[in-house]
Length: 207
Image (cartoon, rainbow, N blue to C red; front, side, top):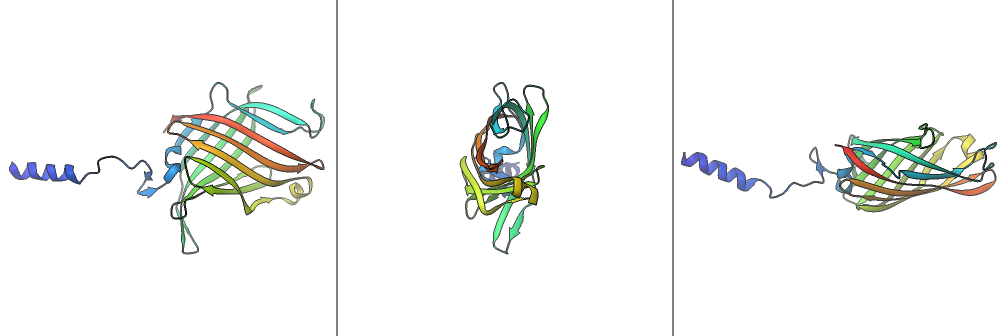
């Protein structure tokens, strides 16, 4: 009985005093760890300001303001090593955005939030079904500003000629149960520069 008690005590002492909430599946996800799960905007939702289409009430290229609600789901993706030196862990995410006015989906985004622990960098690498993809990066933290990399924007020839993306910046604040973000996509469309902006607050609804 004495030996069993000693073993139990030794096991208790060996256990850490608190859990490391940054570690998932044995890998450190840093500030991204709490993102895993499903998030939804509630009540106020978000606001999108984009260039209006031809034939709309606002007129071609004028600001069109769209209140929206959205769902974002994050899940653990595969880790990776770049050039035998940079070790990365990643979360895959799916973002679906709906107009409040008629519940129609008007934005769909697929991408990865990626964490480089050694260099303390976070990347947001994503594509939207407008034949445009972006990679933005910035210093890791619970509050981050991620800006398009030097070669971080890829798009089709049509978009380059008609609605090119010239820059992207996202500021995001991550809490245990709340995400707040604002972002600006710089465009040149209809012969003019336009700041396409989005902002929203989401709450975790499922792990």
